[in-house]
Image (cartoon, rainbow, N blue to C red):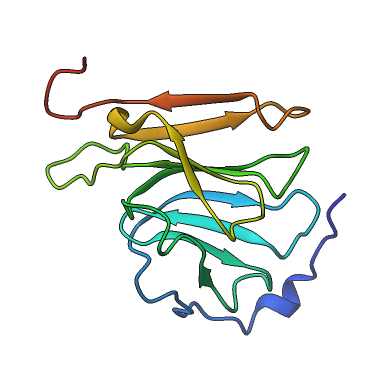
Length: 150
């Protein structure tokens, strides 16, 4: 159950950029199911970023692991929050869309990643994980944006 915040506490707040510096458009966001200050976001050109302090500090957790920095989908398994799936490639089709190379998975909260398949799908828009079994995954893949899918 969430707490109500007294609006007086928020009156002095103003919007400001707190980073990260190379995130790009954010197209995928997920929260940790038991740690309310931990969030992840996937950017169209910046990989996956993580905060553990509610957004004051962000750290890229996919540099060196993903061959495509374009993220179209991101989800954290409810039954095991160390399991995170990332779908690469933007799913919002337009003239300058970035493509990806499949689905990546981590089982250690983002310390290491491996490609688990669907390399030729190019654009992944959504990933859902079974609430009790983190190995049952559904992926919504668009495929090639401007050509045939085989």
